[in-house]
Amino acid sequence: MILTASKLNRFLLFKLPAAFFCGVRTKRLSMQQCVVTVRHRWINQNPFKSMFWAVQGMAAELSTGALVMLQIAESKKKISMLVLSNEASFTKKATGKITFTCNDGHVIKDALSKTIATGTGQTFWMKAVGVNEEGIEVSTFNFQWTIRLKV
Image (cartoon, rainbow, N blue to C red):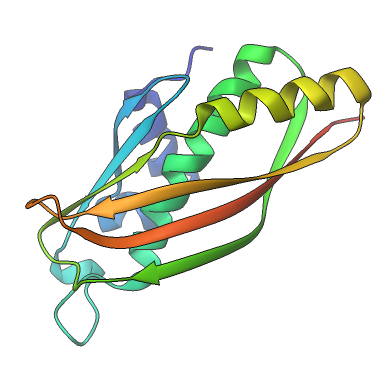
């Protein structure tokens, strides 16, 4: 199966319903970049009338994880993936439509090649930056992913 933005959004409905109902949507997906949006609404707000940090985290994680899923699917190997750790910083109140972009497809390719060649697990960091409709950065998330061949 070829992974596309629309198939990923359908996947959210059935496998990650919290993200789906909070409005997290994949807009673009390629081997190098993934763009995910989420709009501030009543269902995903905090008491301060901005987007709850965990909703931003779901969108940011999806922008990195979708790239990992796509490249694993392209490799045609059975490989598991898991977030090992993450870091986040918040620089502005998140209101309106927030767009998270990850441009780290090249990082995954290297790690996948090493995992397939050596059979040992690999870890790598990926960054997702969230900007509002004015293009102002509201948050940055870094996720440490781990991949390994399934036995």
